[in-house]
Structure formats: C-alpha cells, structure tokens
Length: 482
Image (tube, rainbow, N blue to C red; front, side, top):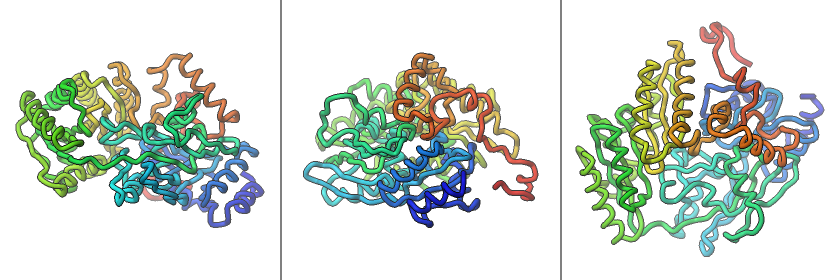
C-alpha cells in the first residue's frame, strides 16, 4: 500500500484513526479463532457512518481488500485480515441512538454490545433477546454478520428475527437501507441476505432492533444425568411433548470440571452431563410445564434435579454455562471451538460418534451446546507444544462434517469464516455454491469485501494460508513476528 493511499485515509479519518505501527496491528491479526493469524497493512478506526463510507470508497477505488471487525469475539476466522488490506474496526461507533418503548425497538450503532441494549431497555420492562455467551462484549454488528443466537435461541430465534432494518455501506462505498420499520415489506428480502453474510456484502452502520417485554415468570433447573445420551434423549422428549423451553443447554463432565475449577456455579462434579432447562412466560403456564419437564427428566434417568430458588441462583447457573468456553482454558493449554447442527433426534448419535472420533484421534472433546435446537459446540482439547495441532484441526473438521452427514449443518451461529470454507462442498452442490457466488458478486464486483471467507477457493483449501505455526526460534523467544 502506497504512502499516498495511507495519507488519504489519514485525511479522511484523522491521524489517530489510522494505525500502522506493527505492534498495534498485531492486536488485530485474528479473532477468537487464534489458529489463523494475518497482520493487516492498516487498521482504520472511523468514528461515524460517513467515515466508514469514506474509508470503503477509498478501498473500492484502489481495490484494497478490507475486513470489517467488531469486538473480535468470532470463532470461525471471519474477521481474519488480508495481508495487504485494511481492517475497518467499528469499535468507535458505540452509540445507542434511540430506545422507543412504545414501538418496542431501539436504534443503535454496530459497536454497541448485546448486553448494553438490554440494559438501556430495562427501565421500560424490555430487553434484546439474542444472548450469545459473549453478550457482555460481542457487538450487534458482529451478531448481524454471523446471525448469532445464544442460549435462548430455541424459543426466541436468532439475530435475523430481531432486526428490523440496517443502514449499510456497500463494497463500492455507496450506502443503502435494508429492511424497514414495518415488519412486512414487499420485494426481495435483502436484509435477510445481509444478516449472516459474515461481512462479505458490506458493513452495517446503524441498526434498528426489536425489543421484547420481560416475561412474567422464569423458572430454571439443572438436571444431572449418568450419560450425555440420556440427557439428549430427555431434550428430545421435552420438545416432543409440545414444550418449547426458553433454553435447553447441556454440558458434559469435562465442561463441568472446567466451570467448577473456574468458579463455583453449583454444578455436580460427579455427573456425566448437566442439562439446563429454562421456561418463561405467564406464571400458570410456566408452573404446569415446569412440572412436566421435571417428570420427563426423571423418566430419562436423572440422578439429581436442582431448581434455581431465586434470581441470584438462576444468574449463577447461567454464569457457569456462559463461562464454559473460557473455563476450558484451565484444563487444556489449547482448544478449538467447533460449531455444527444436527437434528435434535440424533443428538445421542452425534455425541457418541464425536466420542469415537476423539478416541481415534487420541484427544479429548468437551461438549457444551444448545441442546434444544441441536446446535453443538464441541471443544477439541490439545497441546500445540506437544505437536497435537494438526490432529486437533483434523478432528475439528471431521466433527463439523459429521454434522452434515447426519442431516445437519456446518454452522449454527459461529459462521463459516476461514475455518470451514473448505468443507462447504460437503453440504452444498457446485450449483448451490455458484449461486451464492453470484449473489456475492452482485454486491462486491471486485471481490474486496472480506475476501477468502465463506466460499471455498483453491488457494484457501490448497495452501490454508494464515494458519499460525510458530518457527522454532519464535517458540524459544529469540525472534518475533512482524
């Protein structure tokens, strides 16, 4: 990138909004999937939607690849930079522009976190339903990119179900409004295509989201089971009984061990699986269904049922569940978080097969997942120092493709990104992928908007660029990457 182009970015955004120092750039070399790392040429920190458009217009004119980035909590390499490109960080666009309790909506910028939306809406008895485990730090812009869900997606759906409209900057630097305040809009659902496109169709700069009233009653239990298969069968029976919990989450013994080592959330250490079921809604309905859920858990062999007695205890249950990914770091030096979906009726089969794949690879897998909708989040535990990285990557890929083979999907909410692009032909035909490429090209004719993500390319799948394998001198602390 020439000095003239850099100077143009400085002129458009301000000197403090253009990072070029190699040390500062290193902070943006990866997202939550740290196995893929690329240092960008520049990082841009615009303060306004107009500045985002200015930056994209320069990129489009000079054909400079750009990658939008929120909080960097993604787990699929979706925010992986391009070596000769720029990262456009949305962290400075953090305003809650409006909370409209009458129409139950809020207007926010992309750098606002999920939890901050709910906090702003709370005085009005409202909240924002999508709640990924990283909701304290993950941003609405990233949620739109990945179509994130969270623990309560079983009843309340994903980000796409809670966004009314988005002002976006398209890859050529022009702006558009996708969607509208009205829930019914004629024509093509361009907003639906944009949400979940993983930053490949443009950048959202202003978002109108739906707010929901807080439920009248909430009840939560944790049921222990002697096997993950029995816990999975219990979930199937709950849904088959016509009960739709707000959440139905599961953790296996390895995950419970990690959580209890990190914080005392009250989980039983001597159980093979813990099933968290939460019901919400009108008091009478919740009471009746809660009794049914307890009975169904007993029918499937639960060894203990713990009912959250108050809001503090309920919060502790969820604190443990949402800390599970980070807590695994206490029992394994390295791990890969996978994300796939299987039909709910095949949960037990999928968990058994994952165990078999792990045993064959000589590695441990911790299972933490949204049991209610079959969205698995296996954590492949390994030690890079012990030379286990390649086996871990192969096991992670095999688990994702197993989900497809069982009639499911490569991803439920973490996205395809860089991590699973090469597995896309396992789920989609050549015609399917060609159609996706046509849609992408209609938005991004020059291929500069988050290139190398979602769709497989020969370069990506042949060489796997970006996977970080430290040089022996780097591992010894004698040299450093620039």
